[in-house]
Length: 310
Ligand SMILES: [Zn+2]
Image (cartoon, rainbow, N blue to C red; front, side, top):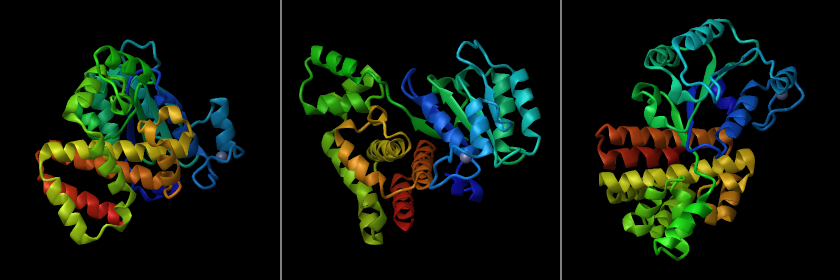
């Protein structure tokens, strides 16, 4: 991600969202540490430079934290303080701002924060964390690369599905895909979602880099319906996010496609974290264009060509 940061190709704001206790803050710490390190090796923080040491000690001058778990609301004062410190040139490579819980920003604070997102005074990366992203104004959301985290207790979901009469291997996968949401799991397992489609999507992702224009056109034609494309984009995003999580944490608990761990392990070797963030960003952008009433076939084509051209 360091290289991407240098070339400004990666969005400057991330939103890690999902229920409590699923590794959002852990992932944020990993990312922040990597962003401040002055001598990262192969995208990993060195652990020895002054920046790494200050980060470990919690004293790095470029790391800014807005909010804490007990805050009922994050007001305009907190944002103004942040804007104050961001106006200084960073000590190291970039300012890194952590905002959590991002959904507690008051409307006034969110509007002020939006200005900062739109026109950061210099090098700045923002990491927002929220269990309730629907409470964040859409204007702020639209500036963020959104990365979902699933609930830890998919076992509970599997149990609940079992009591409702759902059995079989697809229950496990649906539970993992439901991001901790039982209603969504029921929807998935009761037919709105099919394991075959996910298999197709994963196999597509695996050969994405070698797709030719003719195949892209054919695939885009298959995804010409809004609902079909949306489902596939979400599955694609989950796949690439799994690769990123595996590269960053090697923690299988954070992986959504839990039944495909060995494939994730080997596929992740073929990417850098920076590439994966770029891909996830492309998919998020495609989803946003789809929400904005874009033409599904065209959106699919542009995305697939982008994935193939890397
Ligand atoms: Zn370092």
